[in-house]
Every structure is written in C-alpha cells, then in structure tokens.
Length: 333
Ligand SMILES: [Zn+2]
Ligand SMILES: [Zn+2]
Ligand SMILES: [Zn+2]
Image (cartoon, rainbow, N blue to C red):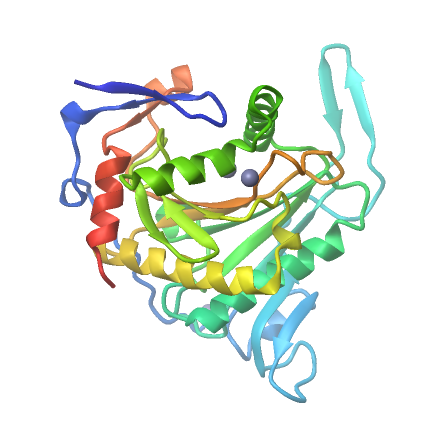
C-alpha cells in the first residue's frame, strides 16, 4: 500500500510509494567523479579568471586576488540578478514585474579542485559556513533585499556547471515561494499552539527515533516525515533560532561536523551521489523570530521530477523516510 503523508510545516502532501519500494541499489546511481581541469577559473593561480574577490580567507601576508587563499567569495561572472540600480516595481494590469536587482555570488570552498565538503575536513567546512554568515551580514544592510538564499549544486546532474567545489548565494528583492510556504505554515502552527513547529518536530523525531539519522549536542539530522525526494535530509539546530547568520560560533562548528558526517554517509550508501544543498533562514525584515527556525536541506539527486509532480505539485517518493534514515544510520563512513 502507498501512503499519503502531510508535511507538518507546509501542509504539502506527498505519496510514499512503498509498492515501488526502492533501496539504494535500485536507483540508477550516477556517482560524481571530478577530473583535473587546467582551465578551471576557481583553481589557485587562476584568480585573474574571476571578478575581483569580495571576501577571502588567506594564509599570512598574501595579497588579494593572488594565490595563497583557503576560501574566496567572488561575484558570479554570469549573474542572474545585478546589484546596480534602484528597485523599480511596476504592473501592467494583471501582470506584476520588477527589474532584475539582486546579488549573485560564488563561494569557492577550497583551492583544491578534486576535494568536496565531505573530504576537506571539518575546520574547512566551518570556514565555508562562516563565510556564508559574513556575506549575509554584509548584504542584509542593503534594504532592497528581502531574502538571501545560499545553495549548492554538487555534480552535473544536480545543476553544477563547474566541478570545482563551490556554493552560491543569491540576494533577492522578494521572498521565494518555498520559504513563504514554510513561514506561513509555521505562523499558523504558532497561532494555534504557541510553539515553533520545527522545535515540535525536533522533539517528536528525537523521541521517536525512526527518522533520526545522527545528532550532536547542538544539531540534529533527520529524514523528514513527508519528504519530497528519496533520502532527503534536514539538519536543524536544536536551539530555537530563526536566522542562520545569528547563530553562535560553536553552532557552525557543530553543523560543520554533522554536515560532513551526513555527506560521507550519503557518499557511502548512495555511491557519491549528485546533490543539492540549501539553507533556509528567515526572511529579512519580517517579524518571524518566534516561529521560524533555520535549517539545512540536502537532497540527493536520485530520481527525476516527472509529469505527475508537474501536474499536481504532489511528490511521489519511492523510499520511506524511516528506511532512508536506517540506511544512512548504518552507513558508517
Ligand atoms: Zn578548479
Ligand atoms: Zn524552533
Ligand atoms: Zn526548508
């Protein structure tokens, strides 16, 4: 029997299709393999191939835009939105539009082309998270921006156009739909229960244990109750906090440790899968601090979104989260 499940945050329904029950070996796995690339613009020594850096963590005494760095943040060479100009919103009857104001940056996570977040070491992952924080703190001074999304495409199948380990940041003049759905759902839950829905689900899943993958004193990794995709994994801070960039330093260290651990488990169980990773934090300048709770979502790319999903907005997931959690729990890196 299949099962329909409702996500407690957004109210979105999914179908967990246990009839077509899929174990890791049943997916057509496409392992991410990275070969050296002498033309890579993100490699050390190729600093002239990117726009000038916005932020860098450098070893002692090295000048900007030169070799000698551990991490660099540069503007995207082909930005989807541009920083220059004023925000201009106009409508044509039914139709609403605004000019393409925003910021689009690339975080080059390591000078080493063939490494990944799973292999660069926890201190380096912590630096990556810290750079996200620094860029968000800087960009949120700009009142034109309503939301800053940080995401990562790992592997061509997940949308990466360059192999070199990197994440992206886009500052937007609007709050994106996915976040709006989470915020609205969390507000409703708060209105009736006076509690944060994410705190509630952390409490319930920690006690229940069936969807729990790993946890530390500060962080918890779980397979959500109604996941859209097989092996979808969320990492949440246990302490209530709405903004990623306001977390205390030790929580970035804890997140780095748990994130690297989860990625290594996925590499083992799902054979180095392509994946998308994103950070959901509260919208800027909205009073949602009581009930929104920042988190990380990791979605291995194992299935394709097909006609049924496009037609209905219902996701069909062939792997129950309890099973996914067990597989990842057992995959000791
Ligand atoms: Zn490279
Ligand atoms: Zn909370
Ligand atoms: Zn989310």
